Length: 526
Image (cartoon, rainbow, N blue to C red; front, side, top):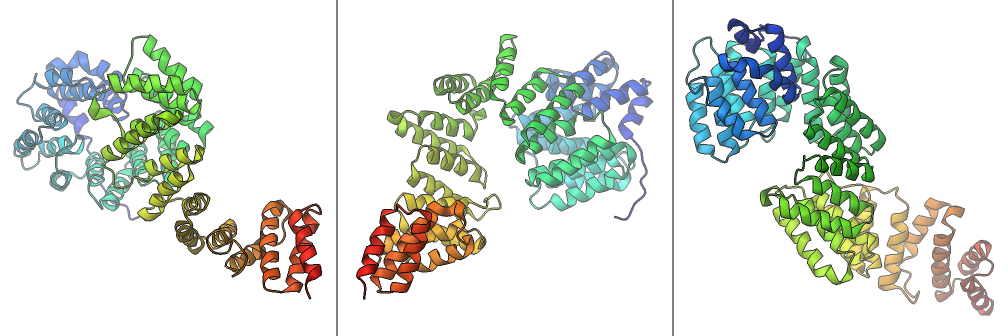
């Protein structure tokens, strides 16, 4: 990538320095803020915020980060005419669902920008970018105006964040982050944000690489370790996931929220008892959050303690705001209810609730939860239905065996037409997956040739046999194939093939009744 030169002005630091503050102390506070160490940043900012509007603004942002919105509102109101603090108020308006009020205030802030003073533009754009309800396209336009005045890495990171909120804006976001990465002081956070981009795109290997670079550039940055933990979980490396969240805890403020994150990762790393114990420890210390019962209940479900799991999720539904109940809460509650055969209808009602509140375009993660739950309960018809929905979605989150499971489970459920459709899809996409042809053969036999008269299963069975090459590990399935092919050969009067397949069966199991029967029939054949 071609390098560009910047007018590297860390404007926030400069503005603070102009107001006779201790630059190093403020720099530490802003670095803590950037690394989401809100409690540490707050401790530095509180003593100096009374006499400085910008320090006050960042104090308010730290309070938002600590989920103390009412405190933040009171903080911002201490400097009602200051554009930075007005930006904080605008953020809160968006967070409270007052989008029109937020937009009006953003426009007022932006209008205060002067010829060389781009900061009102940045503050206005930040209010949109780092909350919900505003138009990210408007934020991008404001950042562009600011960049035209002062092209610096801080603005490039922010415009990258705004681009990520726009459909199709990922490429522009990455370009902005890459430019910001050219500035030494921003290398760690730029790589971290690039990692977030890849993580959101479910490209976990690329996310891991960027998070690793972020840690390399600044080993005091806790954020990559937190998200490395999530990314390693996504690629199935659970112990490494746990190691990284422990590194994160050492570098973070180790706040209640950080410890909750640790417990969440313990759950993801399948350390279910540790996750339960950690959440219960925090609750016993007076740090209860309603969503803690989610991790406790999910973990108890995985440990097959279904009564306790139901009680924990009942507590979640009782204590958590309805708007903060997530689709998986209903899905997992339904899975718990499924363990009681008298509660099937109630379980299905909860599955419907979970799907109804899931607004994402890609629901495959829920479909897979349902498919696997029904498969475990040996309800093959229902499991096949959900696997088929995944396959029919056509989305990138389809996994390699989804069509196979949809086909095989449809076969076991006796839905031969659906099994044929799904297994053929599997064969078309993964032609080298041997087992597909075995079940295509079984499905054709089950649907059209139980009496061995038309040979519907001959072609797929022979294709499968050519792929497994009489592998002894496949002996049980080989016997099924030889039995069918031998019976078809007898029905068609093909004595040579009948002898071949019965001999192969006899070699696997001399006591096999079908092989002996075929030998008797063959002996009587002319």
